[in-house]
Length: 87
Image (cartoon, rainbow, N blue to C red; front, top):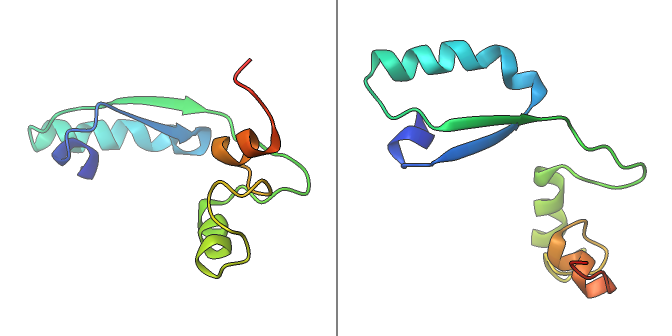
């Protein structure tokens, strides 16, 4: 509902939310709200790497890393600082 109220065009979620899509769209229809596009994807698992957003936020806020662009972070900006290019 928040996505609809905030005019979000699309959302990306993992496959475990696929079963919730039908009730979600029904609620939006019943409330006559905008229905954003929903894309499902499989979960990315990398061994020995923290990918949880909550855990990454804790690393940044507790100053275990220097920020989101720290080379140890599994973020796009962190990978760029490691030397990866878009090619």
